[in-house]
Image (cartoon, rainbow, N blue to C red):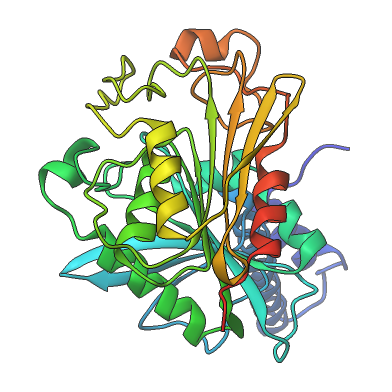
Length: 346
């Protein structure tokens, strides 16, 4: 059937019944009714289009004009922070009710990424649907985070991303029933570096998980926190030995991944770690005081990527100069299992 425009539909409404013999005023009334119907249909179409936008669709709102509670599904939000309009997305499963306290996972995108990209690629929404928690996707300025000595303009301009993310946590807690002992943070690459900075400089989170990141800020006196690190053994953008990366982000010298793991063992008062090898995946796991844990997972043959994430179209990864995600494990599943097992101790 041929598609009909709104103007054609309006004419059909007006002339569906014969107009001969009708007064001019009657025709005008019919035309007015048709116009109202067309406007209402246009509004419905526009609403449907908005619900199917990028990054999972959903609604958009500012902090000043927001409703009392977060909308179910995906929605975007803005807030004014230090005179700059910052943004973030949330995903609330339909199963999450208004009274039962639920966990919150903050997912920080990597360099050159965005909140929408992180929501699309790392499969946290589907995990939230099955496990009943809220996901928050903050948006870095210029596609990056000030994780310390890296990366991009936020680091050069000393953007207060610790303060911004703290503000986002406060706002989400104010608009949903979040369990304060089950607030977690994870990130990819530069976002993982930001997650590690938050673990060092705040006590907001019960556990932090880093994927393809590193510690790029001094971490002299952190509060104890459960920490998981996942890293590709052949990652050349953030090398495991702490040497500068050769990727587009120009990651500088950083703490070696093994040294960072060993330091957290001391911070968290852990026992000797045990090592397990399963195919390409090597795990070093230590149990620590107050039911905390510290774990390092290394994936043989994996580069700078989020294992188990959405793969790009064939050839596109090579064209963009990015590594294909490993299938050796699903990082999102592994991270959630770690988070679920390690709430903050009372």
